[in-house]
Length: 384
Image (cartoon, rainbow, N blue to C red; front, top):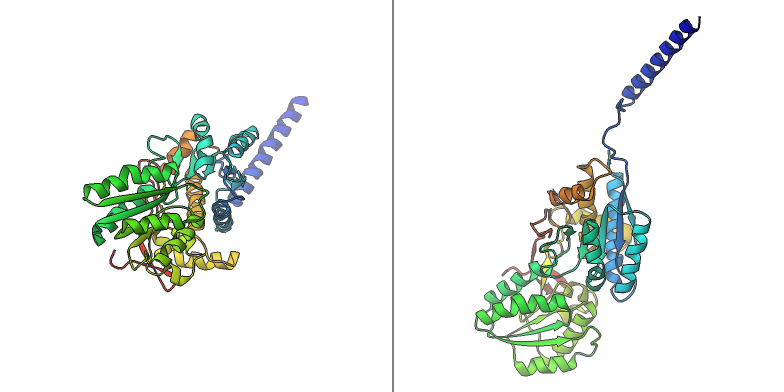
């Protein structure tokens, strides 16, 4: 009797399991586990959301958050990304503390660090941990020899050749370079731009200033005394605003004799149209050609969401999250650090800023060109 009862119970269990399998198949669910695409991707950020560099951190957060929302809303979205937004306040010691706190709660899949001093304070630790690290640093060669660094931002690696190409175009005999006393600026000018100018037989004046420099009249006077045919300006937004306002009253800014770094785009949002008229700038095509490719519709969506026009920082942050999401969809999650690095390296997609494809150093070779300000608007320099 007991044996018959056991047989009956066993048969019922088999039937019940069969019903579950059929129901799962009818619901489009497999009868065995597949790739764990629903496992959240953990991204930890360590960026300056407050403090003197807050324009960078807030823009990274806004652009990244918009990408998270839009990617999650796509039909059939298969990767869930959770971002821990942390503010290092532009302070390297705070950046170190944040890193330690973030890893105490479990290692993230991907890390995001910036800007220069803060990212450098934690870079060696991230190399040791092997976590893929998106760096928000301009440095020319920051990723050379790195095994885990990636960059979706424009960089001096892209900028320096544009300066020299512009020099070949306008053929100056005397060039004044005004730049901030920071390692990444010194590297660009000391190792690439100045040697390139000297090879061309051009006389060079270098005026270097500290981060806290505010009154640029003294530097403007020195530049005027040198009598340059071309002036190259480098610094952050506030520095470039001060430099333009010191140089123009001395008649040192004409049409095409001043070219600035990427941050001139930010400075132009503070300066009046007549103050930036005729100034050239090394700029992403996202800025000089705002309706090209995916940029036009994206700008409209950004304006509707935030009530303001996007900076190029917003767009590169959006593309950074896009890269992470794209890599996640090609992985079986959770994935190892090595698998993450390989997947990100293999990215080949189209983003807001252009092609999303990395070179051998992990740098996004985003398209840049010379732009010119006309009536307050940045346009492609058609002679470029």
